[in-house]
Length: 515
Image (tube, rainbow, N blue to C red; front, side):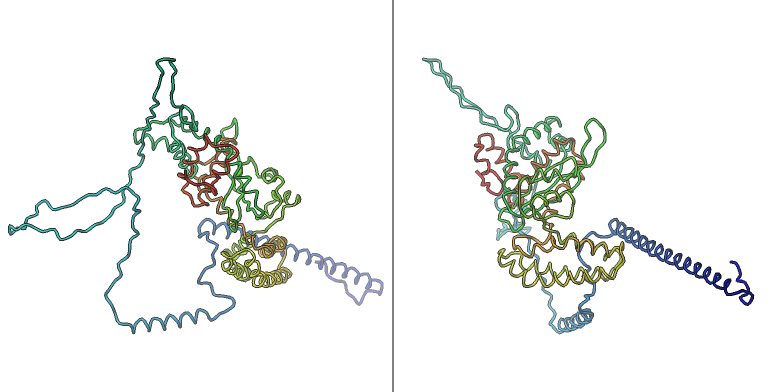
């Protein structure tokens, strides 16, 4: 640093020049300090962001994934709750000590086995019914216990005998026609086809595993034959799936969600990421159904092609592929669970007090939803207006205030921005009792795919992916309607070959009645 000259030896003009130089240096230092402050703030934001991401990744890898708050977490509204609990536990322990002791223990009750199961009686009697003293023993009663047995892979053979009848005079031959089957001239019955479909698409057993299971009971059915059965059955069921899609799109409120599924690239020994979309009726609807749509990508055109000219309320997350539908008249319903998840992740990783306070507000909204879940839409709407609207207004005001106090780019600012930017969509459920608060219903319908891809790993082609989506639509919809998927599919495959096309809706899961 250059030393200053002797000020006593300088004339006024030199003093003014020196003062100007000093002012320039001060301004330069101020700019440097301001630049360094900005850099420090930017670096701190990046450090906070990376620290949050690292903690989140560690939680995903090592910690539990439940999004429930720790029940031992103290409430922000009452710091004395732990004290009250301790006092009540002490009083309860004192009361229990004062009660007279008893040695009687209640014997646990076992659920009775179904009476419709076949029963085999096995008697156990002593070999000798004479007492050692020589007298004959007298039977005074019995003890009965039941055990459950299972015999896997029990196959039966249907031998169809078609008599031939001829007239001796005109030599006319009469014979009963061959019963219509899903696979003509094939060996599988509707029951066997239904078993293969359920094992593959409900129990997620690939065909090579089914081939091995059949082989263990002495039945050699090549994997190629099983694949042929699956392909033919999928084609036969497609008209029913199309009718199910029309039934779902006939409702004003639909849930939508998507999940990745690997698909084998044609002509290459590698896979690429495809997607399966789930479109489900609302949990408040009188129809419980879901339709899956398999697509080679996550582009918005696939959602638009499925929905076509449907105009209603779509419950979904903030995925961009739905934006084109919103521009064409579809009304967006936001998912409160996704908004909550942002704060939960922040609270779980950094123990953020602001995130916990947001979670407490949202918890109040869900407590109101648990209260109105079983009510009629009009009553549900009225209670939401009375109880949920004030909570939403308070939450919105709190978020706006907190957003002004936190730095841009921080983890809490991103969580706040996610909700504030989507507040209109998140609030629409308050104005319609038929609309749910979140999209968890659709996420539950995606779970069969999340389980299945761990077993079959990837779809062999786009066609096989679409076939899986079609058959799984029927299976999952049958479950939602309270049916046994095997019983439903067996009956449908039995009746489908002779069922009139204009009455195909009678075989939909929500309208199906066993023959």
